[in-house]
Each structure stands twice: as structure tokens, then as C-alpha cells.
Length: 176
Image (cartoon, rainbow, N blue to C red; front, side):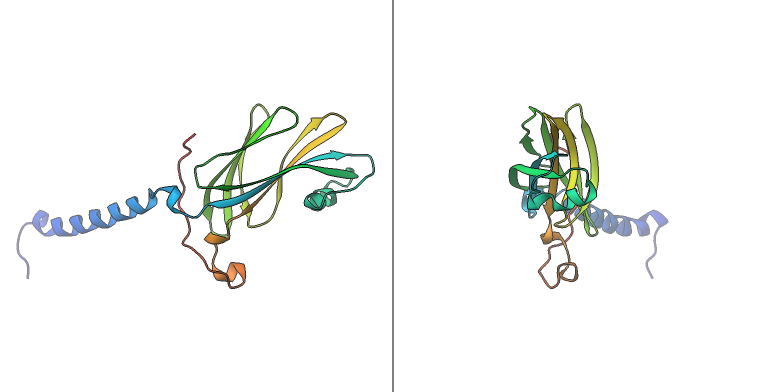
């Protein structure tokens, strides 16, 4: 049996706890560049109420907003972004949209979106499911911005139907 004061007996346990916590903090603060990037596709479309064709990227949008009878694809950009790294797309309306992957939580990607003076929000997205993050009046219609993330590297094989996985990420501070 170890004899000594309470403080002497407690010291080894405290040292072990501090050592374990510092390792967890070091892992949580790992450089985001060491983690796999998140692939994002940003599609910019021009939606109108007049009849016409609907670009394949916007079929889901047209089903949800049936009063728009045509959506033309104006631009499609793909990014590979690390957590804490902003992606930027200039829009035909002289506006822009910035996108930031923040982290993966469960089966969803937390992303932040900014359009100066118009939009500043964040949401959690499903893998490979496009979401409309903005619509802005432009000429005789609306600009429609859709973001589709691919963060398969952070999902389990069961979520992907047998594909390999990488451990879940940690939230990273905005370094903008």
C-alpha cells in the first residue's frame, strides 16, 4: 500500500490525466491541410418563368420551384477545400459567394456561406446532395446558386455502401 499525503498520492493521477488531455488537444488542433479535402461543386444557373429547358444540375430545384420553367447553367466550378479554407465564386450579377467547409458531424458536413450584403448563414449538408443556397434577381430572372459537397472520405463504409473511410474531422477555426 502506498503511503503519503493525499496530494502525493493524487499527483501521478493528475499527471496522467494532463498527458491524456494534451494529446487529445493536439489531435483536435491538427493542421487541416493534413486531412483530406472536401470536394464542392458550385453550379450557377439562370432561372426564368418562361418555358424552356432545365439543366440537369437543377432538376431538383425545378421540382421544388415549379413556377420556374427554365434553368440555364451559366457556370459550374469545382473546389477541393480543406476545413477552414474559403472557396470563392464571382457571379454574373457582380456579386460573389464564399463557401467554407467547417467540419463533419455524423453523416453531415457543416458549411458556411456568405454573399456580402445578402446572405451569411451556415447549414449541415448531406453527402453528394445539392442544396440551393441563394437566389438573386438578375435581368429578367433569377440567379440560382447550388452547392453540392462530396465528403465521402469522412463517412463510414456502411454510409457509402462499402467504400473506405477516414476518421471524422474536428472543427477548425475560420482563418479568413
